[in-house]
Length: 532
Image 1 (tube, helix red, strand yellow):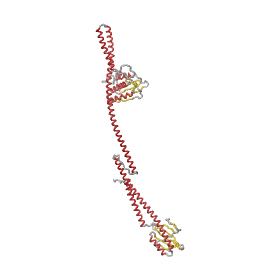
Image 2: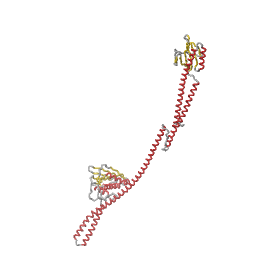
Image 3: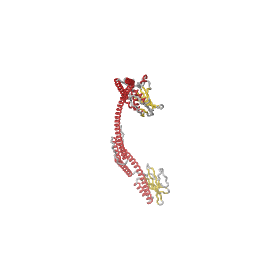
Image 4: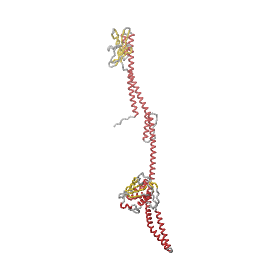
């Protein structure tokens, strides 16, 4: 397929100017010819009128009516010397009749003589510009001619001179004039087109190429490309606008580079913060492990403490009986030194046993609770944050439904956290293959109590053992010690509340913790050590 011809803007402008100049030349040639013909026609007409008037005047002055031969000679000379004069007829009016006096064309048709009474023909070109001078345009042999008639008066004699004159004869002079004019106009047009090309190349083509070259450099990535501004014209405005656009693009590119650097720094900072958070999370997991181990130790200590308390209770009664009998034996044998010595030894050993039991109880006894205003919802969220790694490890999902209208609750924060940890550990042990833990809080305004419901979908609790789940040292787990729920109940009791099992099927377990809004006191009663 042939590629279509594409012209540059320069050639388009030049071709447009050439077309305009050609049209101007054609129009100028036509108008020049028309005006020249009109002026020539006017000139020939006036000159012909003058010539005919001159013949009439000489006829009157020289009395050519009496010398027709001389008149014929003079008219014939005029016709021969002027190519536009075709025929001259001279008439004399005698007895109201026109008699031909002489003619330059004896074989041709006679020319009419015109006067004030003559009627215009179909061309309507009759003119009566002077008294005694009448002219009319006629169409003869497909050519326009004038018939010019001038009145002749010689004493009492009247006559007319009529001449047939060509209206537009083609002369060599006019042809040469027209040709030279066309030649000058054509040469001037060629010179003008050449000048336009020259000035176009200087004032338009070169600045355009410079702007295009600057655009090509900018497209290749050189944002320092500049276009020269030669003049304050349209092309200069284009070059200036291009330079401003490049400056704006360069500044935006610099801003983008700065933003990229900031983003990279932010990413590095974010990675560092993520690494720091990972380290903190690892440390928190380690701390959680330590806490869980500490809670396990606390459970064991609690077991020891309860055993010690039970031992003190069981041993105390017989020791009191032994002490009473020893005092009675000492009173019954006051003079027996050996008996008194043995009684003193036995009393000393009994005091040692009592001091040992009291010391053991003192070491295993829980400290007094420190009540403060706490947010139970925040405590639940803290619990889930602590056990989240363990829950993820066992594929357990935690869900919450927290009543945001809960007021602050008077409680010992660490004890309640221990209670929730004990419930969580029991649920984890009951769901070895994963499951769901749900924790919900609710405010009972009528009873002024706060309820926390802890639910899992693990193995559940056999209804036959529900009455023993809170007993110390009782458990259905192979690795448990039976103190978790016992400690939970003791902590609830110390807060003036209670914990109970509300689910009696084997499809999971549900515990409900109820705590009063009024601060509870545990008094000076002995309590179990906390464990997880």
